Length: 443
Ligand SMILES: [Ca+2]
Image 1 (tube, rainbow, N blue to C red):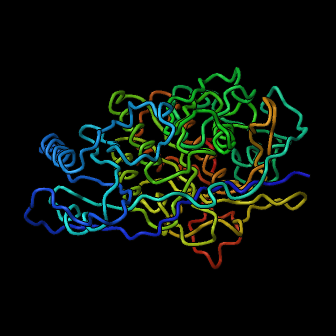
Image 2: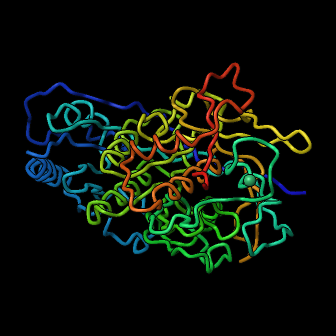
């Protein structure tokens, strides 16, 4: 008997956000709320291409004068060098020159409400938050699945399903043999267990390039599960794509809005340095309560040319309430269940989020994935966290296709043009576009 694992990451925010547009005159670094507790905030600055440099320079000068704290560039900083990555004694700068300007640091609430949020150059200020119940359920179990040297999909119905429009399943997973070659997929998650055999000899590179935590190994399994569904040798959708882990959470590293933003902006910096690279982000994590900062950063990442796929969330609620899935340009993935033989059907799961912010459905129940228990462990997983990586893999298949160079809008249109229409049941009371993932068909 296999235990199942709900893969979901939730950020819980209890503090209100302050989005202020009204300009006011500046006083020099007012002493506001001197006796109040310090609260961590994410701040985004309002910049344009014409004033980017001056806005950033002036704002950080003001900050450093006010706060007397060290400024850290999160994209270059070695987080393993500090034991407490939550420390309050720094300004964590996640700006990417010309693309986005912002930082995370602590202030008193009075300082934010009465001064910072009223500055002309501040687009938004929002309290950062730590996840509760970060990795919801479940322990991964070792299984005895037969490992196959070819892309037979007899025991992998999720892969078998996404290469064909209708049932019956044909026990094969057919896909373009470019298989995601040359596409860089950034997995913003708990890291990747690189020694797992799903990542050996598969055609693409696998690495963990950056950690925003105090260590780099995947001590949870979530990131390893997700990465193997995207591009694992046997269980992955696009097994020649490059997998680049960015660790934003772990056992000693609670996921926060700050860490997700750091991860996204890190990828934006990479895109800025390598504008011709085909870059995809998979974020199998959601914040249930809005999170304007995260949504704004995700929107900017897509505007910068990054293909962005996110899970819709596992609460049977309107996906528009969640970040970053509510962002229109983000590809937001809901989960189906494939019913057992002999009456195979696709059903929207009882847990999946739904609604107009969902872009597409993909299988999200009984999904086999690499585990961290041993180099050959395969676990069964469930959730929109494991539906999303199917779409991320399919995006890599689309992007690797010949010399075509799709921007995010074109690639999304392509994805939707391949999708299987009107096959998903169980949407009657949860109005959602009836589109099921289908990988590019083979002629
Ligand atoms: Ca098939």
